[in-house]
Length: 452
Image (tube, rainbow, N blue to C red):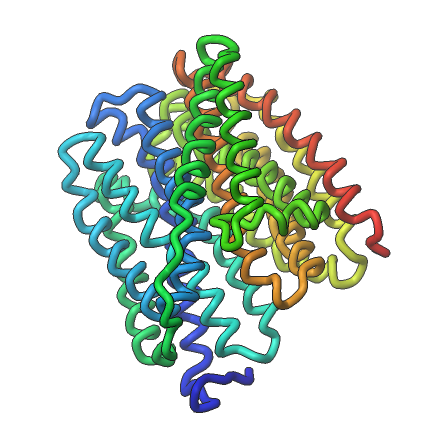
């Protein structure tokens, strides 16, 4: 692995990459670890399904906003500084969150955690681009794989630990990762070179509009519980249009909407990733609650059941990667989409009386689909964009992931508002079946010139 820095030498390049990997996994890991803890948190604070949806979606909205913003911070102030600052914020939130006396304090700590973890991915990508020459795109893609894999493992890890130490353990488990990443970063990442002398240019209105449009759409989807809210839909559309036209005219926009408009194929990759994430996280979010409240499993057993999705997604990832290298993107992606439709369809075939092995099997099929679709979608993006575009493209990919998460948390809040039961599980499954079918035309368009 060849490297470069101010002295044309990074002393421990593998440890540098390890530092970035450990930092990058904190965001997706904390995104999903909380899912198994939700029943315990809901019981302790006497929360409704709407409260739980707010707890989850607030983390996603903050992450979606700060991912691109942190990228700009790291370019301006220094990537090592922003990376280490992110680790510090995650440490503070992980220490104080278990002491939360109420929901609002817990949301506040999760907000700090979201800001901190969001700084790590774009700063890490910038560090890799600055100091890793050989196989740079492969290293960036590897970070994306670790990000997806850690998200899949989150429920299993938290389920095993919560059984013995309560829900607060999902925050304490961050410390070994934070400490190791910080040590490697301090030792291996070169000191930031002198940054730009000009002050940072804040696109405050763009940031506000983006946060507002995400919140409006979230509230619209959550309001579907009580019927179709035309006023909220109109407000969401108007806010989105206002954001687009405002950012389009900015020389240094918060989000480069011109880049997306000029690259429809890339934009469709992001839409496809939103759909894939929506299916994946809807199940990661709803299944622990369903398994504990309907099938009556404890948190440990629920976490082991969720291992079905994560384990088979992990196993499928290297298989799909090699398959793509041999035949191109279309066939592996179509395989993932068709298997996903089958898996989501089979969600209708189990209920509270079903054998656990059957439930495990159905979730495993969905895991296979997610493994193929996630790595295929991410690698298809890196095959389209130029090296110069990889930074902004990877940041937008993570933003699209959180948009999918926001939609999933909204779906959870709407469908389980009247209670967690087989009927509402089937209602979620029906929506996810439609979403799974929509992935196919996206794949066909993205890969229409793919020789594979």
